[in-house]
Length: 252
Image (cartoon, rainbow, N blue to C red):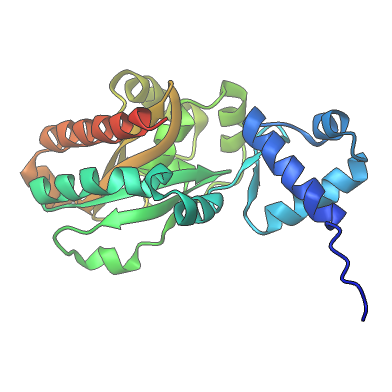
């Protein structure tokens, strides 16, 4: 009888070591990973690109790598209470109950924001056309993330070929700067029909230890949100964000 080879596969062992190191360092580059783990740089690069292709890692603005949000799917299976969606769900449901408006939980991946969970309120016709991902410049959640990005990164971002989706869409760096300070002061960002005519979104951040880890936004027809009162919606968003942050911090 042939004896079974129970030796571990070295490539997988190296991949786990790399994931562990990136998780420890939050963000780290290929050269430093290779040096710390004493793995050839070419090997590290191939493993990282494979993990990135499966959305287990994401490349940051400084050519470093961080853990991708797909890892939350695995964490949820092992330890649900540590899942961002699990922490947020009750608070989002409460917002929806209080306002009867749709609220979204979004995270950033490079130059886009991705809605990873929504609580749907009163229906509106534009809702069926909404995609789960948006560019940073034309979404309220995207502006929340951009306002805290390094200045040089924001300038570089706006130097690209940005599409003006509506007449309200901000595609100019200096125009964004006029909003940036207000966003930083109030922790509130608006999409004033900049993604789609007739649709307004209002967002705020989810922070842990002063780091933005996600954003939440309320979206709906401009006229309806105006009737309900933007100031009231802002207050509800801020209270919801604090509730989510409290649950996360309590479990760190």
